Every structure is written in structure tokens, then in C-alpha cells.
Amino acid sequence: MTDGIAQGKAAGVTGQSLCPPIEVITIGDEILSGSIVDTNSAMIARKLGSVGLELRHMSSVGDDPQEIIRELREAAARARAVIVTGGLGPTQDDRTALAAAQAFGVDLVLHEETLEKLKNFFANLGLEMTRNNERQAWMPQGSKVVPNPMGTAPGFALRHEGCLLIFLPGVPRELERMLEESVTAMVLEHCGSGLQVSSRTLRIFGLSEAKIDQMVKGALEGLEGVSLASLPHYPENRLRITVRGKDPADVSVTLERAETYLREKVGPWVYGVDEEEMENVVVRLLGEKGFVLALAESCTGGLIAHRLTNVAGASLVLSRAYVPYSLEAKEEMGVPGDLLRERGAVSAQVAEAMAVAAASSSRADIGVSTTGVAGPTGGTEEHPVGTVFMGLAAGGKTWSQRFRFRGGRGNVKTLASAVALDWLRRFLLGEDPARYTVPWR
Picture (cartoon, rainbow, N blue to C red):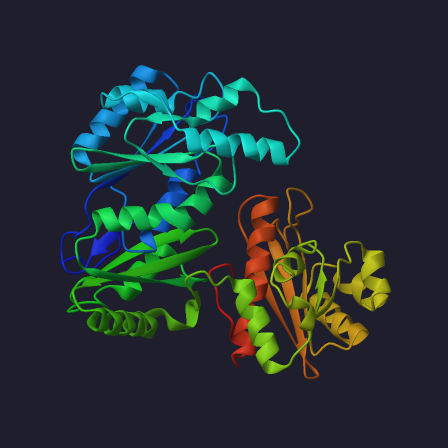
């Protein structure tokens, strides 16, 4: 029995994984040269993981047809399903379809329906379809078309000795849509073991992966068919619970029980579930409480406001956001000049004054502020680079917290915005702002 968590893969609470082997191959010289970063493999892993399937192997290969053929044959020999991305475009270096046909001994044939769709696509845009675009309509004989609602290059799927191989374009936004609309279901149907699978992801902020591992050790002991995966996702961590079983009702009950057991260990740090972002939680809580927020961001430069305004409906709970970056701007928004000269812009007192000024000038219920040294210069012995003060004003009271974030300028801003949102979240849940504790102190 495994009590710990293995990064990037499930640690089986009840033993070996029941998932059949699934692989991903990404194709393109641009990946091997480092010209682009392969985000497709991670996307596929997340999508499959959301339905309880796990990748066993990832590989990348260049545009050399012989290398592609060899990789396809090796993957098909050991995997139950293989998802291949890249090399389906109209140019000379897009060789995946031909390599697939040669790898499995079939002809490359023209798919007339796909060709007609390509012609209509360009005609509707008033564009001429060049002859090389026809390459996208040639597929291995016997393959099934996988529709691409976002682009011109369709995918295709073929079977070889029990292995399902699905070939998809390498453009991430096209790939994502195809995974959502058809591919994930295809893989699940082909690889399904007859078991019901259900997953849930707990989003955690304020604890390191190692600390979480210690805290949840043994928490799921005795639960049958449960696996737990640690999914670091800077600046937070996530725990994905997956339950497999024959009876849907039993699977559902076990999943709820597993979540309850984990929350007993790390509950205060769990801010959301599945796709719920921190900003979504804060906007929802503000709405439930009937509160309006105002921000005064110096060192974060509007990043908190940016995150909140990514949420639909944020205008109902966010009044305004100031970016008083200079001393003059801070004074103009209502921070006393004497206080700025006496304490300096990077101080607890100024952070509190900024929060008060933001709330009072916009008639908001809550004001939140940030002021600090994002770096790489500007640090002092008293306030080194990475020092950030945050202020919170609500109900006639003020609080402030001092943090020290490591890393470069972008890292400091990212962490500061996340901590500010989490501090506000906990306040909205009734926690004492003065007792807020995270590792960055």
C-alpha cells in the first residue's frame, strides 16, 4: 500500500493502476530545437486525467519520416491507445499522415468529403485555396476522420492490432477543442475497463507539496479503488482523487468520503474544486456577502484587478482599482504625505492607509492594498527585494501583513497577487486577518 504522493502520477492507495497504457507522441523539429514548448502533452494528460485515464509514456520526434515511423510502431506495440499531435498541415515538412500509412502498411488516400469541406472553408472566407492545402485531405486508408471545428486540418484515427492511434493537429487551441468534443470520449470508450471512473481535484494554496504529502499521509487508507495524484501548479498545489469501481453509486460515495478525509487534513488551505480559480472564489464570496471591493495596487501593478476582472460578473463586486505607483500618486489618492515621508512607501502603515483610501474614495465595503519591492533593484537591509506589505480595511478596522517572496520580479508579483486574493478569501470566510499564515513570511 502506498501512503505518499508521487509527483505527476497517481500513487495507488489500493495498489497498481487499473488503467491500460496510453501514450502521447508530439511531432515537429521545432519541439526538439526548443523553438516552441510542448504544452500539448500536458494538456492531453490533464484531459485524460479528468476522466480517470493516465498517460504512461510521452515522447517527441522530429519531422524525419523514418523516425516518425519507428516511433509509431514502437508505441503501437506497447500501448492500448496513442495520441499523436503535429505534422498535419499543408507544408512539405508536414509528413505525419504519410508516415502513419507507411508505418502500418496501408495506402494514403484522398478523403473527398474532407477536400470539399476545405474548399468550402476557403470559399466562405473569400480566399483562394492553394494546391498544397489538399495535403490535409489525404489520410491512411481505413482511417476515421476526427473533426476539427477550429481549423483546416482534420485529425484521423486508425487501429492497428488492438491499438487505437489518433492523429491531431499541433495547434493548441484546435487540439483542446478536439479533445473536449470527441477525442477524450474515443479514448475512454476504447480503453475503458468496464469500471465506473470519477475524479475530483482539490486546489490548495499556502502549503508546499512536501508539507501536503506529510499531512495527508494515510488519510485514504482502507478506501477501495482510490488513487491520489499530486499536481504542482505554481504558485499552488492540487490533489486529484480518482475512484474506480463497478457500481456508480459506490464510486460516488467513495469519492465524497475521500474528499472529506482529505479536507480533514488540509481543509483550511483548500480554496476550490476542479476548475475553480482563486479569483472565481473571491468574486463569488463577495457576491454572497453583498460586499463591494476596491483595490490600491502599487507593486502588483493592477495584477489583482486583472485576475478578478477575468471573472464574468466581477463588475458587481469590484468598484475600482488604483495603481498608485509613485509617492505622488499615493498621496493624491489619500495617503497622508507626512506618513509617506516618515514611514516610507514600503511599510505596514502605508499599506493600511492605501486600503482605507481605496475603500473610502469609492464607497466600497472592503479595501485591499499592496506595496513593496518587486526588484531586481530597490531593496534595502530593512526591506530586501521581495518584501511586500498588504493592507486590508473593512468595517472601520484595518490590518496589515508583511511578506517576503523569492524569485524575480514576475515571481514576486504573481505570488503577491495570489496571497492577496487568498488573504481576502479567508477574511470573507470569517477568519481573523491578523492570524493569516502562509510560508512567505
